[in-house]
Image (tube, rainbow, N blue to C red; front, side, top):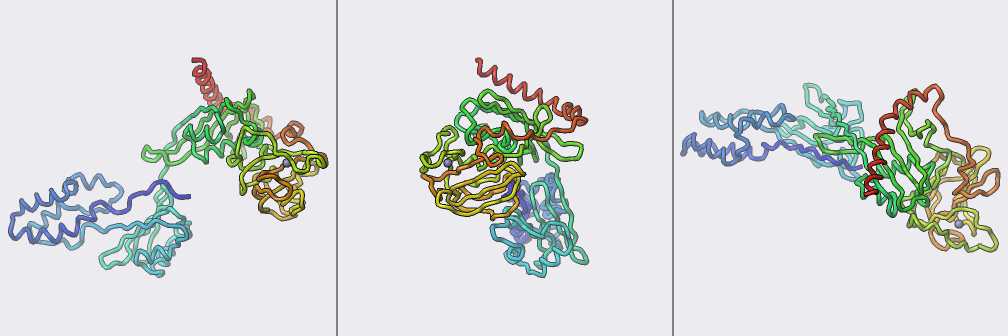
Amino acid sequence: MPRKNTPRGATPLAQPETPLHSRPILWLATVGSLLMVMVLSFSDPSATDPMAETTQPTEPEMPPALAETAVAVEVSVVPERPPELPWRDFTVGDGDNLSLIFNRAGFSDTDLYRVAASNSDRSLKRVYPGEIISFQSDLEGELLALRHVQSPLLTTLYTREDQGYSATDIVREPERAARNVSMTIDTSLFLAGTDAGLSDAMIMELAGIFGGVIDFALDPRSGDTIHVVYEELLLDGQRFDDGPILATSFTNRGETFDAYRYTDLEGDTSYYNEAGVSMRKAFLRAPLDFTRVSSNFNPKRLHPIYKTQRPHRGTDYAAPHGTPVYAAGDGRVIEAGYTRPNGNYVFIQHGEQFETHYLHLHKLRVKKGARVKQGDVIGTVGSTGAATGPHLHYEFLVNGVHRNPRTVHKILPKARSLPEAELPRYLASIRLPTQQLASLRNAQQLALAE
Ligand SMILES: [Zn+2]
């Protein structure tokens, strides 16, 4: 994932330094020191500001800059040490590695080895695209310090010492801000979420929370409503990432599902409904990436080619070639192969009673005998076998008998509930978010009534 924030590496005073150093002495010979100071003032007004140094809290080692330089010039002494040692930033690109970056910066693999040897943590073990590596050289061009900006929250600073380098992690804590959003579905959850300003990741998280109770490919209807109470993470007052969804409510065709985030006594965090029943069910309602399903409101199934010979006993999801298909639940692949009617297909056994079938796949991603977890990608949507166009044909069998996947959840075993003894703790923890969801619902009803 590319990082969003790009901290500035080079210090602002670095650039004007060189010309201001060489010029002043010549000027001093012919003009007075007073004029000298004026020239300096005009060439970089901010630099002569006595406050300039204190406005750079991230550069505590910053030397006293130009006001003092001017004084030094008056007595015709050039400072021994230049006031600045610039940082040079290198952004990690795709396919980059540290050796390439060090070489680009003019350093050797030996330098890299010496720096990396100072730290056994993750920093510099691997670099990821979007991260920033900044180099600071001494006057001889030797590596003085290095910064590895791993994220807006974590920078590792390497500083040269007598023996090698020392590493220090600079960690920032984001502020958390409470947020909420209400939306009404017009065409799809994805569009409603995007219009409401939610990130793709947040929309996928919502779909994940409700994935056991709502088929986001086929269930949503125009007028469905969603409320979300969540956190936003801020750095310096700016949003830099989503925090968790704390509570959310989805009303689908008049039926409302509420979900609350809760960390149980064992330390596991998950979502539960208002009665403490887990939102995570044994089976996903839609075993594919719903965001790719072409139309959320066209549940008319494709015409099966073998209509007369073979009753249609599954659900068809029209979706583009390549759309990821998920294992609907934990289980074992009992068939993965090709037949003329099925095309590329996968059958999964779940426990003793249940089987799910996935037909017409473009590519298979699992082999017979493999164990799969709910949500694992087992293949991609295609049009192999007797298919008129790209779609997933999905079947659900209970004790060997085909059931309608759209209604079978009603006869499936109940999801896990929180232990009775833990319920009071849970109910206390959801009191506030319950009120928040209620007030969002009220606000929306008032808005609709007007
Ligand atoms: Zn079908």
